Amino acid sequence: AWWHDDPVEFTGRFASVASSYVHARPRHVPVYLGGFSPRARRRIAERADGFLPVVTSDVTDLDAAVSAPWADLRAAAAEAGRPADAIGAVLRVNPKPGETAADAAALVRRVATDTDVDHTFVDLMYLADDTDSALEAVEEILGAV
Image 1 (cartoon, rainbow, N blue to C red):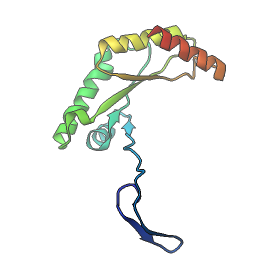
Image 2: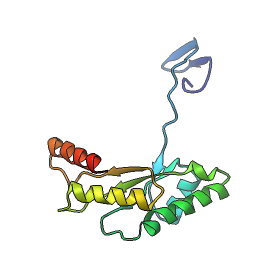
Image 3: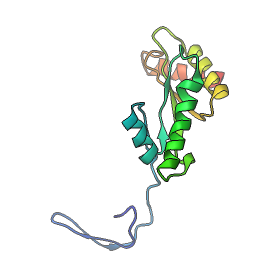
Image 4: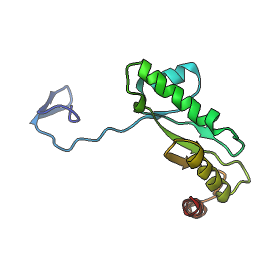
């Protein structure tokens, strides 16, 4: 109730809130979902704020892997009565074992030029063994893109 009612008032078994006006409300927290099954895609189109596609360095056709599924989801959102632009996308880049931060940066640059995705995150699992090497990889990737 504190997130949307004014005034807030509650009487329960274990706690009560006297009639109060709450002005510090949380902002909308976007929910992005992944998945390619028909049910997952329907759930994204009907309810989610966005889509989480995933690519690795061996993906040669970013349109087929990212852009086309995203366009399909936006169309499905419109069919479900939502604005097509209600479905955003954040692309997950998964480096493979043995790849480097430079390899990840190259893939992020490809994504930037070959798709409409504005947001990308890089899974550091295979790029870093500890916090220091993770931070070094992040600095290298950010410096290269």
